[in-house]
View 1: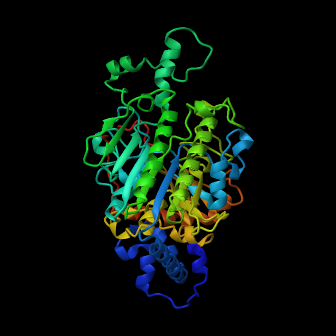
View 2 (view 1 turned 90 degrees about the vertical axis):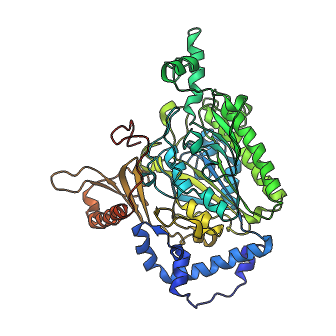
View 3 (view 1 turned 45 degrees about the horizontal axis):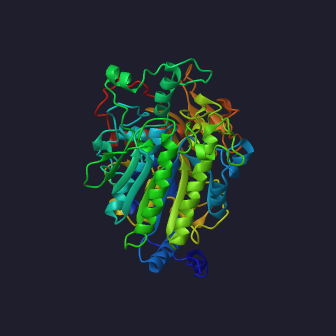
Length: 540
């Protein structure tokens, strides 16, 4: 009998918990500071949340009795996969990017229609690791090779939180939160990491030079002015000879060798193959221990280099190498699920799949896609609204399609709650992530979030509250600078305007006051490496 089936047999009690129990379900019993609008919703939902907490506790307690340890947690963060790209959202084979395994995951679990991320890769990785909007951490923009920026060691990642809570922790994939050793995944709480330093673009730099330096070519080299790895180092001092590292806790990191460690069009596919090989072995090994595990798999799917082994897979658009990469990722996800089932731990393992931002159209047609307006780097829905799913057999009821809002920062707090480590979450800073365990375990209508702040670098560009979204623009002639949309009715943001949204001016102003006043009480971290005004892309 599954945990959920057993839970259904329990009698529902109408006895409310004490106020202490209520604050426990919100995480505030441990003294964490959440953003101000959260407390308004908490106050209105008091009785409902108290009952939810009783239900959640019963489910998690039964799991612990059965498996003798807290649940395993696996977060899979994909790259540049737009809302609508997967088959369950109308994409998949219909646009040449078959996603059969991910669609099966969505059918067997929960598929989120209103999942949000930050508008680009480093900011989302920052958010998932810290549970905080990047504006608070001092690391605002996308990192490029040779930059000395990184996620501050003063930030407490979810890996540190869960490690202190008794978890094995490991990560694979695109780290992109700092190249220097002091910013590595292991320095941020992981026991082991097999990670790449950069985004996908630098993999195209050396081949662009090779393709254009020897003879004329009809092929378009997107970085045709790149001078070559050696000359680039001579001119700039930036060494591109190492693209990633393997690192164990307490041991000096080592450069990854072979195809998976050398920049080029074959690196990412090779890196992914090695990653899934290590991940499945890790699961087999750690499932036999008395501690749960946390895996953060920041897969390179989907990137512009493609996966040669799946170039001719059924339904793959050959003009779009990302389609073959997506197919490879599906096969790797199948290996992941098969391993969990074979080891008998699927019912004690939460798997969440989430994209980091919308598609990057700069290399079209070698690109992902979204049905929504905008793409990577923008705060329109196409840039920040992303596909996401959660899978937990016997715990998450299958075939659910909630429209409840969830944000990537929520994965931080939710993992802490499920892992029994909320007391390890820091109390001296604002945590933007909200515990969404109720949504996962109890279903639609149980999200603890009804608002989202959409930042573009240091600039607060939009606010979503319930079904409406307001873009914050420059005021003019004393009139408020806002562009109002009803996102439920108009998810493509085609019909915005000021006057139909005048009723939102005061509520949005109040949201801004609360949000900014907390920033005065808990100041944002300032970059330790870049003086104010020296940012090249302060709003990206």
